[in-house]
Amino acid sequence: MFEFINDEDERGQVGIGTLIVFIAMVLVAAIAAGVLINTAGFLQSKGQATGEEASAQVSNRINVVSAYGNVNDSDTTEVVDFANLTVRQSAGADNINLSKSTIQWIGPDTATTLTYDSSAANGTEFTTESIKGENPDVLVDQSDRIKVVLAAGQITTDGLLAGEEVQLTVTTQYGSKTTYWANVPESLKDKQAVTL
Image (cartoon, rainbow, N blue to C red; front, side, top):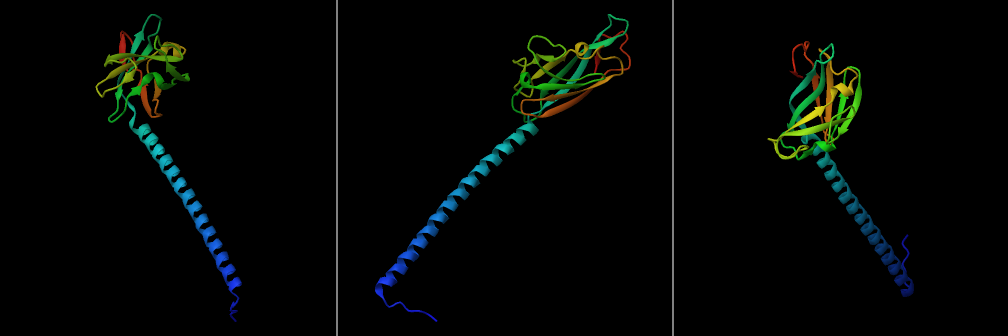
């Protein structure tokens, strides 16, 4: 059943062959371990980056403190020609740069996305003004307040009429979204400004 090798030359060759196979197995195991360690490190860094992005998207939001509209009664009917939002950082948010934000306007007869312009608001762009704080377009502290100006009279064909509503979604540079419904009162008669 078992064959005994009595020749010394053959016995050494079997030992060397076994040693070569053992060394090859150790090398393959070392390479496989290196690949696993590299993959684990890559997945850890990828997971950490994804977690940080998700956390920033959730926490770096803005809050709309108040909103009002300027009433224009130069024509036969009164309309809101400018919508103004007062915004601040939400709790725990980092600096929010409104110049890198977008606002999606879904109104009575128009759906558009507005970008930032430092000079003036128009049909495709919004502008900002500092109410409290040093920067006119960056929210740094929880106490900072910035007014976001939207030219409703140029975005929609007639401006916002009495009783109309518009959905405003502000998306920050982090990708977080804040939605605000601006509702125009049922009557604009004899008013210069109304709460939205």
